Amino acid sequence: MNSLYIVLAVVIAVTNVKTLGALKVQVFYETLCPDSQHFITTQLNPTFAQLGSERIDLELIPYGHASEETDANGTKTFTCQHGPDECYGNKVHACVNNLSRAIEESLHFAYCSELSHTPANVTVLQVCAQGAGISWSKVEDCLSSGLADELLSANGRKTALVDAGNIPTIVFNKIYYPNRESAWFNFKETVCQFVDCIY
Ligand SMILES: *[C@@H]1O[C@H](CO)[C@@H](O)[C@H](O)[C@H]1NC(C)=O
Ligand SMILES: *[C@@H]1O[C@H](CO)[C@@H](O)[C@H](O)[C@H]1NC(C)=O
Ligand SMILES: *[C@@H]1O[C@H](CO)[C@@H](O)[C@H](O)[C@H]1NC(C)=O
Image (cartoon, rainbow, N blue to C red):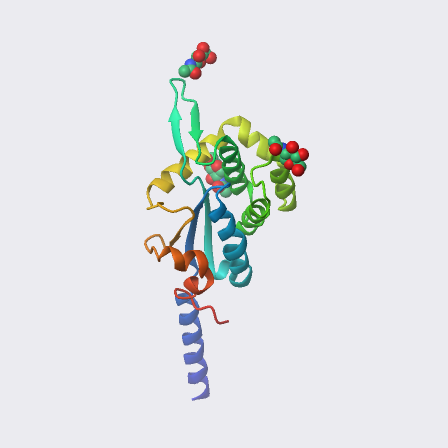
């Protein structure tokens, strides 16, 4: 009897663990957008710090309301809502995401940058990359090699697939679009509607 109960308890525990898989959360943002800054610094970062990657499978997609043109030679030019500085910031964020070994590093960097009054300032970005353990010289290689353009372009294609009417746009499990107020201002409570946050 006892061993049967133990087996049942283990089965229930394992079943629970499986149903508690991490919630896929995609954050579409742009570096100089005040609403993006506010969301990343006051909602996303503290919530991720509490719930971690076991609960939140996070993807950061810097692009926002940008557009892209390719000239006859295949050179890409981006136009960003808050001007060229924002395109630079978005590229650096995209390069850091590509270079980071874990989402924690990418978020640490994004938080540091967005906490600043000038998130796209080269000094800020450099200090934040170093703080997140990302080599600035690799970021510079990414920017000069054309990889940054490729990464931003890929982010643009991803952004075009969602209804990114408001930036930041937060997408849950690819298909669920909770109302903006809920996702922006009660992010943790919204996440916890989909994953069991009691542990
Ligand atoms: C394409 O590249 C050639 C050679 O580098 C240059 O002369 C030309 O101005 C470029 N065209 C565009 C549209 O940038
Ligand atoms: C970085 O970008 C390259 C080129 O697009 C890609 O092959 C690679 O998978 C990316 N790595 C990460 C961690 O995103
Ligand atoms: C970036 O910030 C540093 C330090 O505050 C400042 O000295 C520098 O002028 C800024 N750079 C730009 C391009 O605004």
